[in-house]
Picture 1 (cartoon, rainbow, N blue to C red):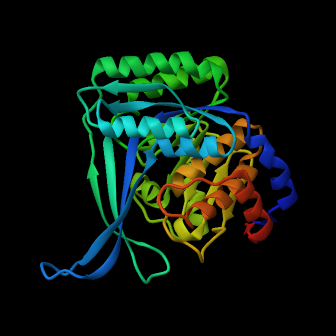
Picture 2 (spheres, helix red, strand yellow; picture 1 turned 90 degrees about the vertical axis):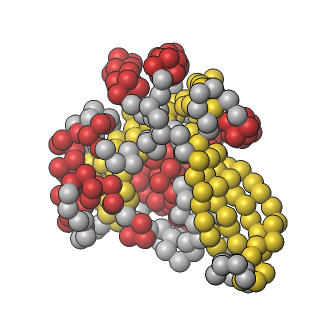
Length: 341
């Protein structure tokens, strides 16, 4: 396999093409809550630090995070998903509005609670804050038939007007047989790109143009460990054939990611940033958002995976679900040496 270096000038020229697109983002919506305190001493009640409360803040989570990334890069995200009729749901929608995300496709289900992930974070003498615990209030029941029908109606209405459809599956019910089948039919009828961040269960997404998963999800699906580059190439080629996709992306943590494409062949991209990793939360959401924007803009999957790699390297330097700006992405391209083989 020959070595292919990044054409940084080409990537910089490609950046403006990520703007002014319309992307439908369908998936499970979460509110991420952060409670931050300063560690002052150990508790006498248990071997845990005592935190003096400093601040609380909220960020869009789950499928709202790729939508937030799309908006931050200058395109329009149309959010489809389900929230509860509760304070957490209203907070989440307010955050989406503040980020410029279109929420006409967000369905309120009074019978559900909005999934909330609360992270307790300690600040102190460490360079970076330390996450101590996460408490999830997750709703995992299948959607009621009337809620699914409302989602499908929004999907049928919005999908013909966008440039691509992005699915983000966090296993809380929104990505189901009906929404998948409807999206595939609309994408086929209207010639739309359709991508997914699968979180496992890859074979649900047969016919999607791009399927992204991480190493653990690919290993679970295939029933074997993936170690060397050749293992990822073989796994990706098998998934391409089984899913009928155009490209597979497998993220590999601090080893970067592997792209296996019908046209591009295989490309293994080392992580753009391995020395300033603060919080990996949401990095996969950034990858699928940037890859979807790139493909919708007519860029190659090779350019897309390089742009996504730089973007992921930026967000892991920040606390919580973070988004890269176009200016930050340009800086990373110019300053981080990355090559792919």
